[in-house]
Length: 342
Image 1 (cartoon, one colour):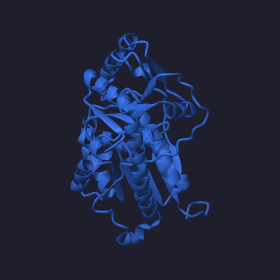
Image 2 (spheres, one colour; image 1 turned 90 degrees about the vertical axis):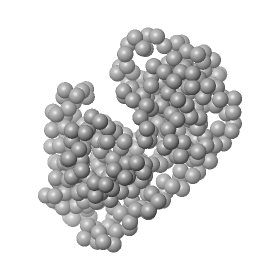
Image 3 (cartoon, rainbow, N blue to C red; image 1 turned 180 degrees about the horizontal axis):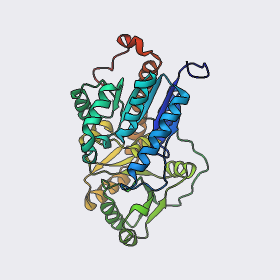
Image 4 (tube, rainbow, N blue to C red; image 1 turned 135 degrees about the horizontal axis):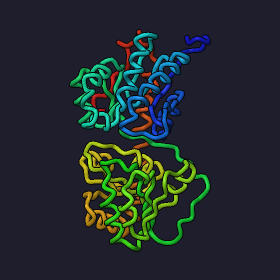
């Protein structure tokens, strides 16, 4: 019971202003979803202050809620460490939803803390077998959940006009080949490229060198973003790092759109149809888009098949997580084990 005498429930926390993935998982589990952030501008220099403030906000929220199960997004590992501290003091257990960025080089300095928190977690959710091997090597219990099918509303339709329109989903992180995408767009003047995300993080010279068929939309409100997803003909999400599952791909699958993805093994295995795979080079990206246009009906049918497959996998994972979250820590020996193939 919590302080008000209500049953201890489940909450999902992320140290970020907003994330559709968290919202989707929380809704599927009947959990409360909380985004915890401080300071509008995020820089490496103000990170210690931000993390300290967010740790206090997290502890205060959890002290009020006293949930039985807490899901927490990693990175940053300090969010999961804060949740682990709460569980040590007040009880309950936590699931660490660990993204590919958690094992990036910039977090290596905190790997001892990462290992400790992973072992204390009741479960670590990861996106692929490579990361599963790492966490199991640390002594953590894992479950692969790489497929999130989101409910993306239609809202007000967006009229894009004639032609072929590619929505390029970006966060402008260092691992995204933005320059190569813009160079490819320059060679495809008949195709419209709508690049989403906060382009204030991009080199102004690169923006200035873009061709007229490229539109930087900026960070869009949900209704405009979702309307663009529904209106475009295809979605492009490219990344330079292997073993990275992308939320932009989840979103594209959720609206049954063909995709242009980086040619990595994990992505090929995850999306066997409905996607064109390209090297992160201008010529390869151009060839991929042309191939998609030429065989568009085939890729569109493939996107429909992928959607149906992913819905089935997502529903299975939801059942597992829901069962896991509702069990009490005392019954841990009776807890359903992650499926061996997962």
